[in-house]
Image (cartoon, rainbow, N blue to C red; front, side, top):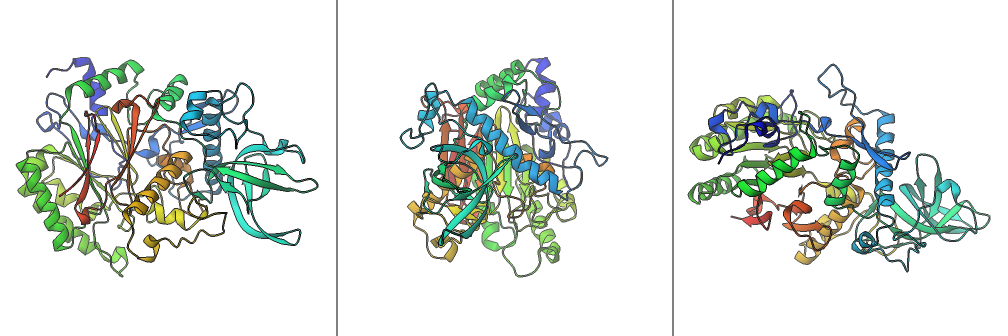
Length: 545
């Protein structure tokens, strides 16, 4: 296959893109012979990008659009201080609220979108000429003014005595105003979790001679699919909304890359394995068995993503287990040396788990594994290797992939305000589901839980909807957790069974390019893994050994 020479510089930046840093990132030079796609040169050192440098899309209310506001560069290469400050944390919530409001208002007059997101006009009344209910600013609400719909951030949930009756209240906050709301009898109209820090639509009334807003219905905001989301940001002149393209590009360039990938590389695959435990005999045998089958098939991965946790659970502090990490990765280097086809042809990406020893601790976005435990041992046997951050972003030709390995579901459940399984609202969100009590989980229930998690994250346009006090995030880099606009594939490597959900809009368009797949690969400890195809009618395949 031949490729036009004027596409070479651009292809060097779109073949493989991953979340990496100079400190702790293990990136080794490619050569033309080691290129993972025959006929195209790739220089891995030029192809890596950091989520800190990805576009930071914010709302501009003056023109009802979005803009790319870059994080200021600093002397350490653009990453800045990893200690979050108060202002950046507050701005992160305000930016997410503004972005979701802009998305909502852009589709307010689109009846097809309203039907697609299943808004019920009988519950949320709409006005003439609009398909979605109009929004009212909090500062504009008047008592006895009838039912209104507000979009705000939920916070400060507590029990309060109102008129001698114990009621559950919360604060509805926007950058300009706040309002105490009574949510005791409110009905949740969405299949998702309302947690601390969620952006929600609330319909209700301001009671006469009262400062408390009586909420009747609460819903999560609608998710903007990939196609209109991409069109929205490209209309604002933001061509590369995913990030990683260091050279100036145009929409025509990206179209060329898409056509090139769709038409020419049907055998390009990305394997994602979660919970790759390297210090147990069962885990090692399972990984060796998979490599044997890949070589025998033959089906050598173009990209092989190994997600932690890399060590089995222990009561010892993780930083006292560095010797165990070295021993585990020494064994892994020996395994790769035995499977030369994989070590020479695959780009291996390591995404640390929530309990792994990382450079940033338990703060999102999570840093890579320290170089001392892995880099030197793998450098000799792997042609292409990346010690990635978490979340990790990959661009494999035209396919955009976001991989997040965390205990997201458990974090959300600790701060639930409302969920579809429990009528009414509650404080604290202490879940009593079987998954949290250690009981056996019914498969249908587990699939339903995964569906709720997907709906929650997509509606909030982020991998972490919780405020900083509930889940530590470096505020100035909160955009590293963003899911706007949606990529082709979102991999949620959580404590979930294998799961896949597709979002396509318009509904009749099921092509891979216009579809977002939200996937849980399952645990490799159970033999489960995920295969992502660059060009196939079914772009994701849930597999097992």
